Image (cartoon, rainbow, N blue to C red; front, side):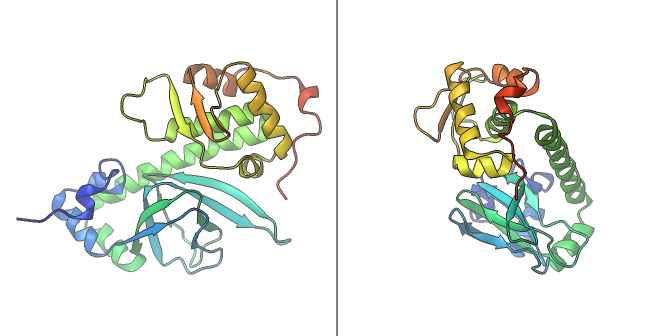
Length: 249
C-alpha cells in the first residue's frame, strides 16, 4: 500500500496539470519533480537563463518581468496557482520569473518531462487548455491597459485578483475578501500608472462603496458583479485622468 505523498496533500492537484493524470501517472511524475518553497521577491529564473525546467505553481503568485535595454523593469504578466510555466520554443528564457508572494511550486527538468509528456497525451491536452486560458487573460489585459482609464484599470486589476484568489470556506459567492499581494507601487508599475493615481482610484472606489479597505492590503468586495460593471462598462471623465497615465519605463 502506498504511503501519503506530497501530491496527495497538494491543494491544487485536482485543478493543475496533475488533474489530467491518474494516481499511477502522478506517482511517475512525482519521481522527476522537485518541490521549491520561496518567500516573496525571489527569482525563479532570470531573463536569458537556459530554459531547462518547467514549473507548476501549487501555491501563490508569480510575476513575469522583462528588463528593458535601459535597465527598467516591466511586469508583463502574473501567473496564479495552479498555473504552469516554462513553455517556450527558445533555448533561453526571454523574461524573468519572480515570486510576487510566498510561492510553492514543483519544478520538472525539461528532457524527462518532455519524455513523460509523449506517453501521456492527456497531460499534453491539459497543458494546452491551461495555456489557452492564460492567453485569454493576456488578451483581456491588453484591452485593459490599452483602452481603459485609470479608474477602470484599478477596478479591473482588483476584479482579476478577486476572481483568481482561492475562495475562503463559507465565503458568500458574490462577496470576496482577500489580502492584496502587491503594494500600490507594484500595482502602479503593472498598470502603467503613477502611485498617486492608483491611491486616488482606491479612494474613489471606497467612497462609492464598491470596495472596503479595513487596511491598505485587506480588500473586501461586497458585490463582485458591481465591480465587474465598473471595470468593463462604467465611463469616466478623461479630464480626471489627464496626464496621470504613464508608459512603464
